[in-house]
Structure formats: structure tokens, C-alpha cells
Image 1 (tube, chains in turn cyan, purple):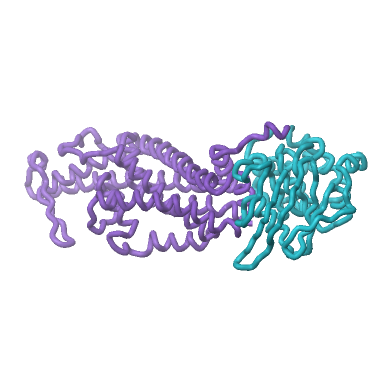
Image 2 (cartoon, rainbow over the protein chains, first blue to last red):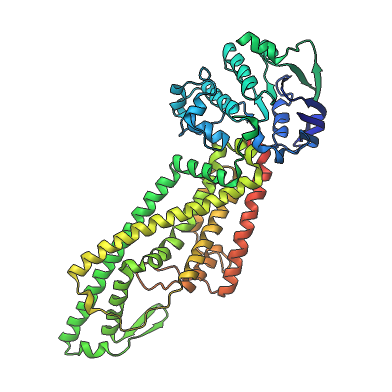
Length: 217
Length: 321
């Protein structure tokens, strides 16, 4: 569970987020939505410990510094090291060794062996996103933040990601951002929207992860 | 892998990541190749110097013979060097040239590898090499927008500490490579020269300058910490590689010493205090400064730069994404 209590963020004197309070429960995929420039990525940076903020952000009661090894953030620009192949980039993103077999087993249809053997500079942006998604799924993290991670990924693959999440990290707290309501609405069990710097709960799109699993199966 | 056994990366894990990046980013391989070539070049230069010194001895011996002077008798008397302004005058040229040749033979032997290579690399190249490596460590990941991934995983303190530790590991790898190449090159050069020149006829007559191996290694480590730390700190603030690299290059190799407390002068003072520069490579003369002051200033400077690396990444942190 991730708890945000009265979180406020100002960048160069401009308030981006103010008095945000929300609880992101475990074993739930929460979809964070909002207009372009509404502060979604800034809020994610604050949750990840990359951005100064006021208020409190707690991961099952703990500060981000105590949960780093259990937190994985999939950034929207999908950064990779160009001189390493896909397997090596997954290891780089995780910061520890993992066998090729273990990486390839994460989600074969998401990133096959051929793609993971390619140097990252040869990969398209969509393929780089897939490398990040493989790393996220292989991370074993309790807290997964996927910032625009499914943009450029087709709908069946997106459903496969959610299925893999349910299998590999059933108790994880997952926060996902993105603009495609159809895709994210179907994948998430809860939706919150960032409007004028505050978080608003959106109802009427709630589906359990089990239903999504059932669809993709 | 379950949530429960997600491994903690830690500083040593991050050092492995940094080493992988600096290796696969070709920075370390290029650095090793350049240093190895320069080590060979240094030995070639030194062996040319041995030949030149032997030529001088032979020339002086011929001059003595032409003037009816006793070369062997003069060898038993000490040579005296007096300096007046820019001019040096030498009494007893026979002994002076003999001593120079004897020192050159000692300098080129594999046993002198550590001292001879470090007094050249430690002050001429290490400041630049480790500043650039520190700079690359601080900016390489940012260039590929990977720094935020590292910061999320490790936090700022562990990230900077890992970079500083990586710098020390890289320094050990670079130094070990230089020494290995240098020892082999000296062994080959010695055997080639010994077959051509009568080395046995030049056993030292004068006491050799004192060597302080521990102090020499301590000063070299300080050079790495200071200039490498400067690279990490400046990279953390600047966020880019090229501009600080060019500015440092100009400052280090073009701009004359800006005073006694120019950091380059601190290390010049320390270099002259622990190494004897009487062979091929001469360290530039230092602006007079007491050794304890130079030592204190450089140690304090290195510590401050380590702290600045941490401060820089904290200040730049919001921009890292």
C-alpha cells in the first residue's frame, strides 16, 4: 500500500500538486490519469524519491529510502544503455544479475530471445518499453510504478503484462499512468485523476484484476 | 522471483553496474590502451636516454683522452654541480656523466618500474585521466537518461559513494595495467640494451636518492581522489561531459600555475618531495610552498570534493528525469 498524505509539490515557485491525499492499496492496479501537464510524472517522481515535496508519502508505513529494493519505476522515456543488449539492459535496470533463462521466462511474447539479444541502440522506442516492462516483471518489486509504460504497446500485450503482474507480483501495489482510457480502464481496478493539482477518485470503471485475467486467458 | 526475495542492490552492486557501464561504454578500454601505449612510449624514451647517456660518457672519455686527462682518476672524485641563474656548471664531467649513466641504468630496470612509471603518469596524466573518468561516471548515465533509474534504486548517497568507489577500482585497474606493461617493456628494453652496452661497467659510485614507496603511493592515491573527486563533483553540478572536460584540459596543460595555492602546485610540491626527478621526465618546478601545507590543502580539498559530489547530485536530482 502506498499512502499520500497532503502531498504538495512546487517546481521553481510554481505549484504543481497541492494537498494530494490518496491510498493506493496492495494487490490493486491504480490508474492515474490527468490532462497533459497536470503533474502526473511530477507526482510519480515525488513518490519515487526524485522530487522534493511537502506532506507524507509512505510505503506500508515506511519512507522510500527503506523500500528502494522493493520499488521499481518504469519511466515513460524508457531509458536504456545503447551498448548493451536487451538482457544486459534488464540486469542494468534491476541492478543485479539474472540469468538469460530467468529473463526470457518472464513474458516470452512480450520480449522474445531475438529481441533481447539485440543491442539497445537497434531497438525501437516500443521495444525499449518492452525491455522496461520485462525488468518490471522480473524485479519482484512490491511497488510498481509504470509511467506511460503501455504507450506504444498493443492491447493483447498490455493484457499480458497485467496477467503477468497478477502471477508474478499478486500482492504488489501498482500505479499506472496513461491517456488511453479504453486500455487502462480495462486493465486497472481503480482510477484516480489529477485535476488542478489535486487527486480525484473516479468511479464507474472499477474492475477486479481477476476479471482482466479472465479476459486475457 | 517472489516479492520476498527481491535482492537488495547496495553500494557494491552499484559499483559492479558502474564498472560494467564504463567498460561497455568503451571509456575504460580506451583509457587502458592509451595508458599502455604511453607506458611503452615512456620506456622507449627512457631507453633512448640510456643510449644518449652512454654516448655522452664515451664522448667525455674521448675528450679526456684528447686532452691528456685521466678519466679513471676523475671517476674517484665526486662531481660538483653549481647553478647560477639558468646556467649549470659541472666540475668533474667524467664522474657526472658516469653517475648519470649509472642512474639511467637503474631507472630502466624492471625493479624501478613502480617509481619510474608513477612519477611520470601520476602527475602528467593521472589528473586528466581520473578527472575525465570521474566526469564520465557523473554524467554518463544522465546522458542516456538512466540516472533516475539508479537514483530510485539506490538513493543519492549510495549512488555517489558507488561512483567514488568505482573510481578507486578503476584507478587500481589502470595502475595495474600500466605497471604490468611497464615491467614487461623494461625487461625487454634492459635485455636489449644490456646486449649492446656494457651495463656492468656502470655500477653506482654515488648514493642513489632516497625512495619513499609508501609516501609515493599515498601521493598517487591522493591525486586520484582529488582529481577523480573533482570530476564526480563537477559532473554532478554541470550534468554534461564536454565543456568541463575541455576547460580542465586547458587549465591543466595550457594555463600556467595561478599561484602557490593552485591545486596543481600542491601536487607538484608533493611530487618533488617524494620522487626524485633526475631522469627522462622532469616535473615542472613548483612555486615554493611548505610540504605540510600542500599536503593539508590537498587532503582537505579531496574531502571537500567528495562532499560536493553528494551535494551536486542532490541539487540536480529533480532535473535528472
